Amino acid sequence: MIASIEFTNFKVLRSARIELAPVNLLIGPNGSGKSSVLLALQRLRQFAGRPPQFAAKLAAPGQNSGQLLFRFHPPFADLTAQLDCAPDGAGRSLRIIGGHDVPSRWTELVPRLASVRVVALDQAALARPSPAGAPILLGDDGTNLPAALDRVQREQPETFARIGAEFCRVLPEYRSIGCATAPDGTRRLVAEIVGEARALGAEELSQGTLVLLGLLVLTEVRPLPAILCLEEIDRGIHPRLLREIRDLLYRMSEPGAGQPGTQILTTTHSPYLLDLFRDTLDEVIVAQKRGAEATFERLSDREDLREAIGTASLGDLWYSGVLGGIPDEA
Image (cartoon, rainbow, N blue to C red; front, top):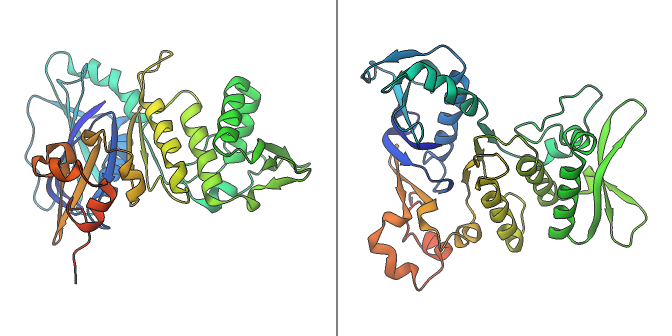
């Protein structure tokens, strides 16, 4: 989908470039530009549906303004989207540069860009009941999870069964997950535990349990977004279950059943999740912070690390500072 993004004076990214694979794990200290990458994709989504300018060449950034350059994988490799931004990161104007028949090719790409999602699942939002009339799509913070799950149960029963089976496989102490509707139309999550007669409400479920359910809804319900960005996907998840989360993302990224596959970007501070990408270093991007500026580096490009990676865990190498992507020391 998106092959690369170039940043000029965008938040902490004064002059940086990031190349993107189908699955991307971003690591680095706070304030190193990880969230700025996700914000850039939000800005592209916001402007994708607006009438752009079509041009033959790129324009230089204006004074006191930022710029984002998006380049794409085939079949849109000949297109470049140039988004000019205000100093605070707000978008100003979109320019599309390309070769043959640019307007129609851009029109073909727009629906995919408009489907981009940037998600940061929050325990309180996930657990909150859905009032009658609430939106039936899962919010970017996990809001309306009961309404979204109820819709899947009614409209896509096979998908609902798949979500329930996967939930109970990963967390075998549960025998079912579903929704209960109150007389006033409010919908609440309910989970049944093996060997227990009483069902648990969402307020009794752990953060990791709710995050897992939210991720299952995101990754199983069609149509899938073209790009899914996830903030701190490991939040509340036990280290032993992180492999299941990683595998969910891999399945989502694979084309199939008429779907082109979703491009994944996720941030993490978990050395345990990083360890699971030991065999796919091209999917790990390290955000390096130097003073007030930040840059990106793909682990597979670090020739100096090959020997160290062969003898130690990635998480240990990151914690020790060998990989970079650590906070500045006082």
